[in-house]
Image (cartoon, rainbow, N blue to C red; front, side, top):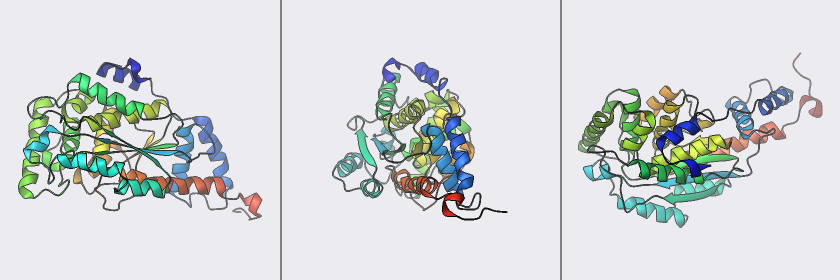
Length: 337
C-alpha cells in the first residue's frame, strides 16, 4: 500500500480515499445490545466502545484477540535548545529499556496480552532545529511516514500508538499552535519536568518555529515542526484507517501528530479513540479542538503508548460484556414493561 507514496501529495491522495465505518456491523451491534440483561445505556461508554470496535473492525461481534502496540522513537534538533530536563541520549537508553522489557509499556502490554514493537528512527541523526529550517526534508518525512504505515498488520484488532523522544513535547505544542493559533504559552507544558527558565525557553522555541512555518498546509506543518516519530505515528494511523483497524491514541505527542491528519482531511480520526488526557495543558486544549473525549484521566504523562496500552483493558471489558452477557430471553429475565 505504501510503495506508491513518494510525496506529501501522495499522502493527501490516500486521505481522500479513506473508508468509513461498516454500517452492517454497526447495525448488528445495535440489534443485539437492547437484548442484553441491563437497562439501555447502563454500561455507558463501554457500549459506545464495543459498537465503535465492531464498526471499524467491520464485523460483529467485535474481537480483541490481537491487540498491538507500536512505539516510535526519534530525536529532535530543538532538544539542544534546552527545552527538556533530560539529554537526548536518554531516547537511546529508553529504547534499550523497551527492548529488555523494563519499561512501563512492557508491563502494560504484558498485562493485557498486547504485542509490542518499537521502531527507533535514526536516533543518531536528530531532526533539524525547526526554528531555523524545516525539521525534516520531504524525503526524510516520507521515509518515517512509510515506516509507520508498514507497522500495521491487517489482522490487528486494535492498534495502540505511542512514542519516545526527548524534547518531543516541544513539537507537540508547536504543531497545534501552528494549526489552530493561540500563543505558545497556551500549548506548552513542563514535559519531562523543565524548570521555569526551561519553560520560558520552550515558549520561545515554539513561538520561533511557528513564526517561521506558519501558514503551511497541515501535512507540511507536521514535516516542518514535527519529528520522525510523529511522522511515523501519522503513517500508522492512516494505514490503520485504510485497513479498517481501530486505533487508540496515547497522549499529547501522539494526538498532535494525529491532528495534522484531521486538519488535512476532516474525519480522518473517526477510527480513533483517545486513551487518556495528559497532564500537559495543551493536550486538553487539543482534544477540545478535535472533539475527542479521552477514556480516562489518571494524571499520566509518560508517553511510550502507556495510556493507550492501559486502554486496551477497557476495550477488552467492553467486548466481554457485549459478547458474553446473556439476553433477557436466555436468562429468563423480564424486560422493561
